[in-house]
Image (tube, rainbow, N blue to C red):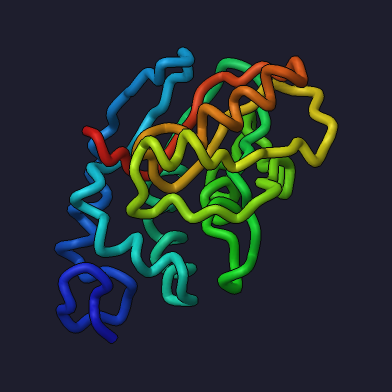
Length: 187
């Protein structure tokens, strides 16, 4: 087997060198114009090649490993909260956001699957901000929530998806504490 990142021979998802590098998180904080705080673990440029795997079964193993380095180590001791993955559907054989929220499970964080879904399946990859604003995901809340929420996604570029989900939850009078993503394309 070859390392998913550098293609060196290894018996694991990542070789020892890459594993050590990915365990060093580059946590950043970004505030969106709607006030939502977004915490990211990696620079997008560092994991861009890896994120291309998310549409294939190989992405399941890679995302699970990256999530174990980042989301699993994320500590939140303030209050009990749900972790909601944006649009965690299984059209590629697994849900990448479900993997991420599964790794957030802790004493104070409860993963909640299939809680917020997009009514349409618009692909934002490579699209302009204008396109993203004109073609909203139209999220719908699928479950009744009785706790505050942490929104979870794999990447943030413009922030439109997170802002749309945040708005749906605010309208339902659900407190959104913040969002967590693997990578931020702007930092």
